Image (cartoon, rainbow, N blue to C red; front, side, top):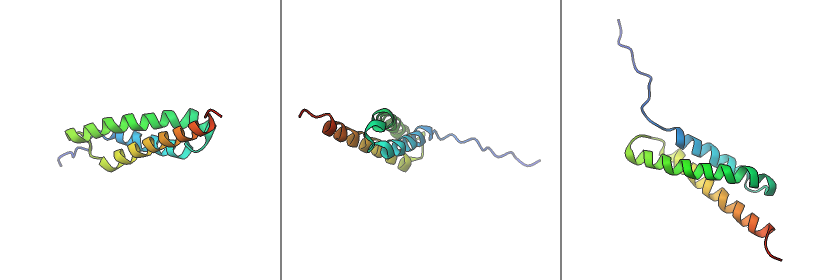
Length: 94
């Protein structure tokens, strides 16, 4: 009887993947003023928070998806920055 190979992965890459998906969604919707308020801000926050936790897991050796985690974190941060600039321009005093 052949030995059963384990398909169980011990890597905890879920938060890095969530960060990437949320970062892409946030970046795509950041330039739309009304949609950005309701979609881009929460998605950007999710991308940044999950990205930081994912990076901590990578440092501890629990995860292996460094590139996806960093890209998601950067996209989320960039989307929040773009949203802030658009918000300041449209809601400025004057």
